[in-house]
Amino acid sequence: MSRHRIVIIGSGFAGLTAARRLKNANADITILARTSHHLFQPLLYQVATGILSEGDIAPTTREILRSQRNVTVLQALVEEIDVEARVVKWRNHNKHEQTEYDTLIVAAGAGQSYFGNDHFAVFAPGMKTIDDALELRARIFGAFELAEIETDPTAVDKLLTFVVVGAGPTGVEMAGQIRELASHTLKGEFRNIDPTKARVILVDGAEHPLPPFGEELGIKTEEALAKLGVEMKMNAFVTGVDSEGVTLKYKSGEEERIESVCKVWAAGVAASPLGRAL
Image 1 (cartoon, rainbow, N blue to C red):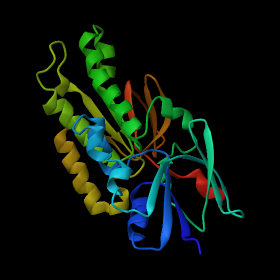
Image 2: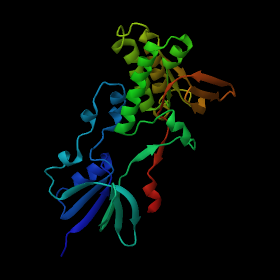
Image 3: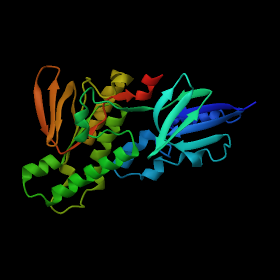
């Protein structure tokens, strides 16, 4: 009798936990994941601000599961799930493959949501992957470098204004870290600009940061961020994003335009589209 075949889609926390808990199962486990690494997503903001390198938060999945002999890890972009035939169809570059299963675990994680405004992504990248974090790192440090050689004071102000959209844990951490970067890490390193004069603005539609965690923690977080020098635009929704800045609309109906070259999107998540295939 053949061994039970288990396919796990995704190598994040859920996928890795499932595989580990099946260590002693009489089964052959195949992990299909878009990347070859396991990403510790909560620390992406530290990669984006240069505190950590990508290798510090993304060990290879094969390395983690090396001693678990009933697991095979394959880098794969899943394209289709045939539930009736119990087959997952996937590809690696131009090579198309399929893997049969007896049990399927979908742990493909979530992506960034722009609430129907996907065109914002070009101007305000999210932070869900290593590539996202590296792109943001280039934009953040690049803004300081461009400001150093810019002679127009208005353009300098725009380059040194950083907008973080979304005051959940990721947005709060990101805003605080950019503020620390400008106020301390880069202090004294430039000759034509003063990084400490940079503006870091946190935007959210809620009344206080960290809305899921209650008003008390939100108020304390707001006070801590203000002490660091982070500006907060609460009760405000982003209605427009372009290469030059963002447009906000407050619950009061008032609108505001913020000129900013570097924007970070940390608002909202979208479920994996694979869920619709089941």
